[in-house]
Image 1 (cartoon, rainbow, N blue to C red):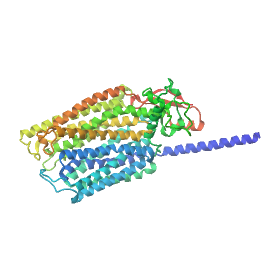
Image 2: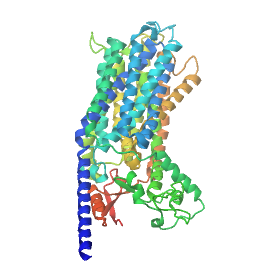
Image 3: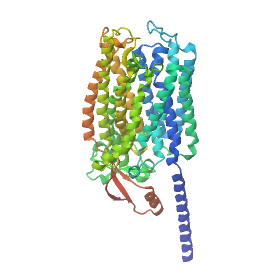
Image 4: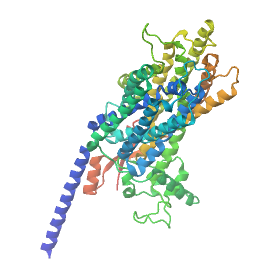
Length: 616
């Protein structure tokens, strides 16, 4: 009998060893996926996508006003509205990705839809029946017919839906390939979000110089065909790297989880939250799939939602019989709290994007009335003025990472130099300066036009260099280095781990909301600023009051900055618990107590170790 018991024990030990070896092999195999080797394929997709997107949109105001003969305000609003749709669509793409499809499949599907939109737009530009007769004088022009407008709308809609699937997933899919834990980020000498934005900037620069020149000097057929080909290449590049990718399986809709917490809290609204947070419900097994690298710890904000984690006599706490509409874990409650905390900061970004939503359209129209000559034979394309913003962005990102961060780190002791919120705030200030400069330059342009009696000739070239418009673009590019990149990084870092695509979608939704707010401002200004001296006239910008519109935008930005300062002062960073992969292996193999770091992300990268916690 004893011999059989010993034999059974030996067999059990052998089986455990085999299972342990198998687990370690699976872990090692998983570690082979992803890594820095996948970045060229993912970033190549993003570069080609951004090249196509910029080449398609950068000069579209010219296509609408000169090829389809739409009035300036109608054309600007059409563009802005579809840009808004393209930036709102990421919410649906993110939910599809986080809920069931996964990021890889969502990116591929979105790229194909986007490509179909570009193909249809290119065909409409080549076929004469899809646009009205040309109108060189820009007076009494025949606008595009209903059919021609709808062909444009369908093409724009397809590109909007496609980009909605791509945008929230690319940067988060890239982050899936590398160690994005707090300790991993702090140990790296480079920042994923800076280099993600840098790659987008390089693609944008190429599109603004090459594609815009072709559109203005060769024709719209080739001008749209090149972005279409680039998008096809981006799909190919992304698929080539597919065997190397680490694909994280989605674990259900994040919106459903948030709704479950709210419903559970409402059901237990009469319960009293215990003074000791340790008495609230936790279930590591249940939360394992949505907290692979970090587990959110209890915070004292929004304590009313803690009611969802109160265990009552009617609650079954076994994972197999658990009703998540009646009880939620602390981690799931903190997911909801994290999203609520982020919203005020996120909302401040809306007016930042609104300030620049129409400025590029109006600036191109300004540029077309100014001297664009670089030499007697070469004219600088007006739509390419945005390259000054892109160049500032590219130089600013390099200087920020290589000079500013090491310098600031000496004083703040923060690996990222400054916090996300400080970075965004600096960007808001620079953005205000950009709008002020835009107003001053418009005053200068009209003063020269009046001096030469050119105010009543919308086609006349005013003898003032187009490069007077460059400083405002450069300031906008510098503002992006701080505000835009900082906001994207903030949303990624402060969002729950299982909602990263949804958080990235919030960035694009802020742009979308900014576009619509900008459209509302432009429409109201155009409607109520009078007919004789309208701030934003349809045809003759020289008789407008564009500088007044810029002063209005400046005032809204100052109010927004004050709002942001208050929100950032009151913001509480999430507190989390990290468990390294080594600790996870020990836990699974030995089932013993393991140490894990409790980290506070207050310093941007959460490098502050607050303590040690023993997990049961």
